[in-house]
Image (cartoon, rainbow, N blue to C red; front, side, top):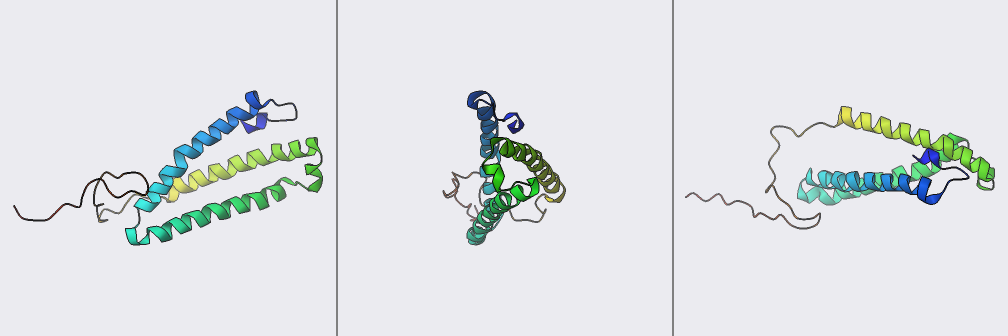
Length: 143
């Protein structure tokens, strides 16, 4: 959708729909992935997992900002000329789409389900991200 953006593009007709799709995708995937990551580790290691998750996200953003202009052949003149910037943008979007597709395939191939002997969580229902479980730990008192 971002390939529709060019020098004569309108914000409402060309830019806004692409931004809405990007926003919907981020809302649909980022929060659930973060929750899944933090729920998959013991509570004592949740801080470490959160730190690694944040560091990976920041590093990926920095690499994208630094590497994408190099991959598209963008130089300092592209920032001064609308046509040169548009050409670099048109080269960058398919590269981004290809990287996302490779990431999806890699995740599909490498992410595996939980081990059968993995311990069960204390409860099946949780509140929001930072709240304690909604169900107390079951007691093991004989009846």
